[in-house]
Image (cartoon, rainbow, N blue to C red; front, side):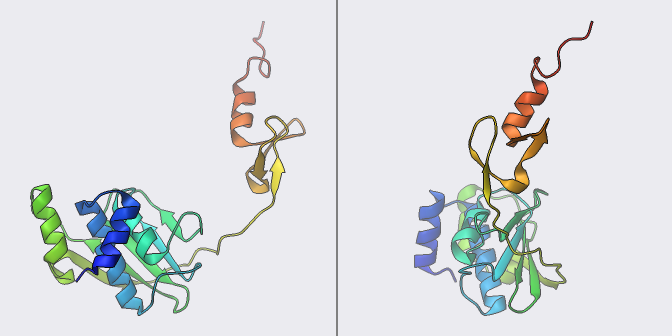
Length: 181
């Protein structure tokens, strides 16, 4: 069920084998099989994850959906769920882990390695409004710290272009808001 090379690459990226990583790995394999495709080289696949857990690392390795490419999106609902969409087909699939009985970590790992997809996951085609592809914006130097900041992330304050940290610092500064009285 799980290709050894794929498992090894995923574990190497994540750092260790654990049940959460296997949930993500199995979900990614299901998605690739569903779309009959390979790993995304750009933004042809997108993933919307409903947690910030170990399995997300497997999705990055196997699906090629990454925060850096702008095709990995987080909705932290604390659920072992991922929705994967294909821009090539316009279709999407929601893959959710079925409620599992209480098992030890070793038993969970074994079950996730050996059980069938149908025993572990619910897989449903869903409608998806695909997010826009990632846009690249120019960097502009912050007027306070000088660091390059994506122009859409700059804040204006009294005619100064500030990155978010410098803006926050200015807004909480006693010099900016002198005491009244």
